[in-house]
Length: 324
Image (cartoon, rainbow, N blue to C red; front, side):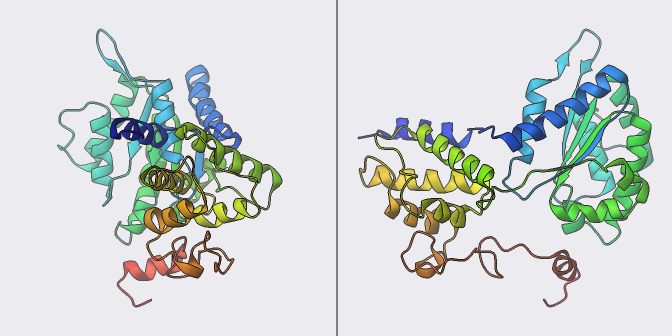
């Protein structure tokens, strides 16, 4: 029987697993090229990276920082890639403060927004930054005030033009609202990278989807591998995860825990069925569970379901406190 230490180590290994499927690799190479282009030419390449939550945007940013890490020099700190997480309740002021913190400014909280911006531009040069990445840009739409998208668009346009380094903004599809607020900013981010969920109807994407599931399962090290040849299993797995990497990991890890608790040699249908309702959607029972024989056979993306995505108009109404 697997002891708790081995179980925890396996869980941690899978949780940290990065499966570099082709679309992920292409996105990473584009961001890396933006960094190298600025380093080699002094000119900038800007990208807008779009993808649902859980598709790997933050992982891409973390990988860039790991490949091009900060370096402590005799007289300063070199920060090749500046990785910025947008604050949960964003304003220009606290975004500027977050950038100053990452640049090592001990007085990040002092000064007006203009003062902070001037210091940011100075420190970008001092730290020899070549690429700045903004993650979770949709926070300005979801949690900022009414004028936030237009204000951050104007501020970003000024910062990008004066900093002269490559820039990547990452977020959900509705980040488009920020770009639409400033035509000049939108023109600077005409290069778009889509990090999409796996598509079961595309043979190539289907193959990559099953390959990722196989890799996750193999990393668990159970005696018997998950049978991906059984009829309907690919569609069941896709319904249960919506083709999104984060949900794929959650589902397989949940099924792994159940298999271990039941002392099974591998993950079976009953493990997957229980894992879906326990690890992904508590209401995913009976006909709403892809691994149940009574499953109704449609995507779980309608209102009230686990993969429902509210349209931008609904988000705007909810933000104003209107009844949906």
